[in-house]
Image (cartoon, rainbow, N blue to C red; front, side, top):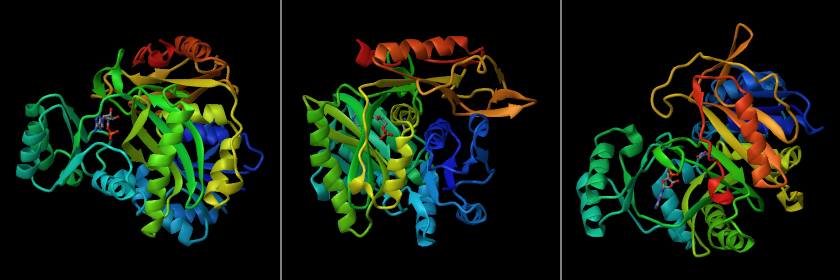
Length: 421
Ligand code: AMP
Ligand code: GLY
């Protein structure tokens, strides 16, 4: 089978790495890909959200399965066009992708499904949003309704911060994404994420993970796309996972199906867990990045079987063989990230690293210049290891980090601290 993966970050490198190990995979194309992916797969320089360009590539390369990595192509309707053309597709329709593209949509689904989540109000003008904040008091969470590249959420510890965030959002800081806001109760507890595949009918749990969103050690400093992750998340015990499936995941998927927009793809279920009770923080309609890297490290080649079964509506017959293992990924980012950073610095030492089923460096933002690997993004490398214990995986990941020669980069040295302490 010829496979096309859309996207070009660490998530897509990990998906491609897992797929390439599976004997079902003949030709593998990643669009647009990056320098790490290009070392073992074909790449195609197209915009993954350009429906016409994707459809052309699928037909010229006789693609049998398309795996959609990021949210933008899903929001653009790429999965709809592929399914309409009869291509096996991993990723939800634009209608089902509203679980990520609209916070108000997700809240309305939770209401209809009875899924536990933060109490909220939904506003289309600043004055009524501010009245709500004054009535509720701080801490409180202000969210731009639409996609805002991970920056549309303000956890306000004071009323003043919340009011300023409302002015910002209605003032156009987030463009159309901020034309409506959702204001939520501040939830306390521990965050973790659960990943499930759904083929429109059946559901398969494929694992849990914990991300590190803040740029600084000890979870300090500004929010990022994620500075590291590990799997499994100890807070997601069997009992918590069962409650999340029964109270949140199944009712949500049933409500989407009832509305005539069944969900097909991976659902990222972001949870807040307090006293053994999970509540929904957010859905994403794709794998997390860098959570995908640790999930793929643990699943290996069987990830492709699960993804393929999901795309073909065969999840009822699918199960995952879990090892009793742990994986961790450390993000190497360009100095300055998540603020301004330079591009083009040379990274060396990568060739000396072991690459096997327990040790991998996934490329997130790299390119090739005169035969050398150069940084092209904010998050640049995902140094990933698997072991019998999280401590073992962590030690090997940081040993790899220390072998990489890139003075313009940095990482957090405490990835996994919560689970290791
Ligand atoms: P999101 O963009 O929805 O993932 O939100 C970013 C982060 O904001 C989440 O990972 C949480 O850490 C935090 N957050 C979002 N909503 C809430 C809430 N209702 N209570 C507490 N923290 C929240
Ligand atoms: N790592 C968080 C996300 O992918 O949204």
